[in-house]
Length: 95
Image 1 (spheres, rainbow, N blue to C red):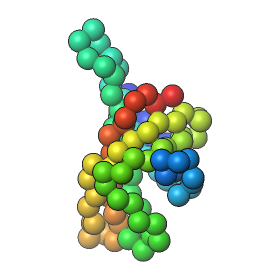
Image 2 (cartoon, one colour; image 1 turned 45 degrees about the vertical axis):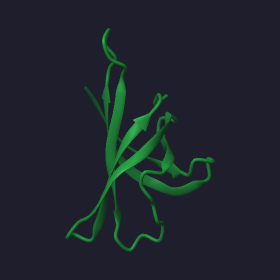
Image 3 (cartoon, rainbow, N blue to C red; image 1 turned 90 degrees about the vertical axis):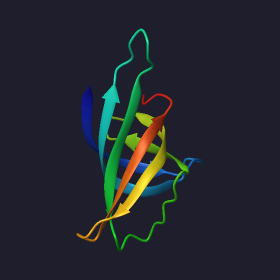
Image 4 (cartoon, helix red, strand yellow; image 1 turned 90 degrees about the horizontal axis):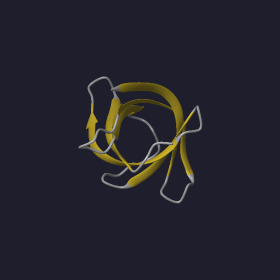
C-alpha cells in the first residue's frame, strides 16, 4: 500500500474550487489479478471553516503533483480539538 501525504484543492462535482491547501492523507491499494485498485483517505478542517461539506456528495480533489480523482465523503466527525475530520473513498482512478 502506498501512502500519499499531499496538499491540494477540493472542488465540487462541477470542478469549481471550494477549498485550497487542504492536507490529504491518501492510501492507494494496487490492483491484483482478483481485485481492482482502490484509494481512500482523510483530511481535517477547522471547526470555524465557512464551507459546508455534505456526505455522501461527490467532490474532486487535485493534488500538488496534478493528479485528480473523484471521491465520496463517507464519514464526518467533529473532534474535541475544534477540527472536523473527514474520511473519503475514491471513485474511479486517481491520475
